[in-house]
Image 1: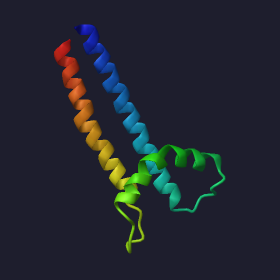
Image 2 (image 1 turned 90 degrees about the horizontal axis):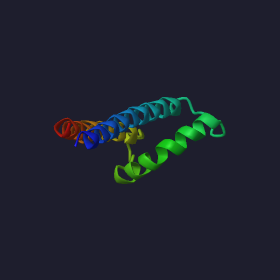
Image 3 (image 1 turned 60 degrees about the vertical axis):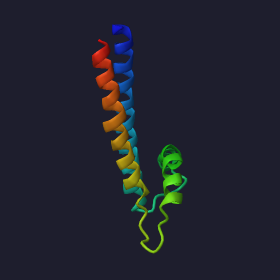
Amino acid sequence: MFVLGNLILALAVILQYLITILTWVIIIRALISWVNPDPYNMIVQILHRITEPMLAPLRRLIPIGNIGIDISPVIAILLLWFIRLFVVNSLLTLAVRLR
């Protein structure tokens, strides 16, 4: 069973790293959006391609309305933190029990 425990532990750690990287990419995109970036810049396009699949559904659920501020990055980061706290910690606990 220790092999399965090690596999789950490795998946949990990789998921934790991916969530951390995605969180930072969302933060960088939000910061860059304040300065009106060139949409043809390759870095801006990459950031947009990585984050838009996650932010677009949140924008549809929570419209900007009269506020004028896009809060979808904040909600996306909160969801990522929830996934990190719930799913990753559950996987880590399961991995420890299987070892």
